[in-house]
Length: 318
Image 1 (cartoon, rainbow, N blue to C red):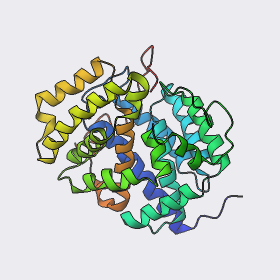
Image 2: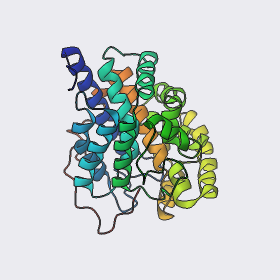
Image 3: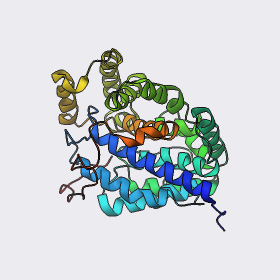
Image 4: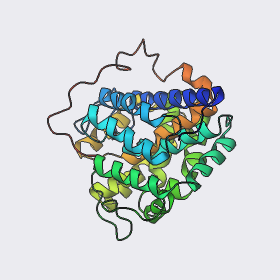
């Protein structure tokens, strides 16, 4: 039986849901080289597909009383029904523990209290959470997943989800968040986001902070370590420029880098997933951010809330 959810709990769920949807919209409003945005489609996908995915996932992701693994599984299933490809598995894996944390600790309003709440959720994950998350991963079929010697996602897990993620933490940045209590989100992404002067700068600085510090897991899986390290070195130069408050969207070289990555099939998807989770945390900690987006309101931007167009004939797995 699901535990009762009082008014404070329901308000916290609504706050977390709004933060999630805001973060997903902001994700495609801002140019992040190699990723899909309003300004630049890529990898046979476009911005409305990601908006539709977020809308589809939000019901299960914030279902009161639902366990982390079940949220991930149900949200992944709902996403596939509208997107017909993997658009947000990494986002769901990162945001589900945050959603549960705020439901269980509805008065977590600061980065410190929210961090403690998320940590408690991760420590309490079960074997059932692992089994449901494994089913979601198999369903989404992310590109370049490969096989593991221990607790492979193609088999039924025998350990809890956090322990299973710890086995992959050395090679996957999303798994590392489970193993290390979302340290990268709270120590790298969130400070960069909150210190930025604009929403666009916040997204780009957070994204580049992740991309410049670790080889992007998605690039490593799909194209290998040398390519991931090459992109990481490029990101370091752009991070310096972003931190100097340069407006990157007006920079032709930044736009060209975005186009080059997409032309070469390079998608820093894990860094983008980490950025979405960071933005969600920022909106929970500073809820006034929900009143605006980087480029205007939903009414001003026809893409936001737009119905998804039919996917391209062949969609590359993410």
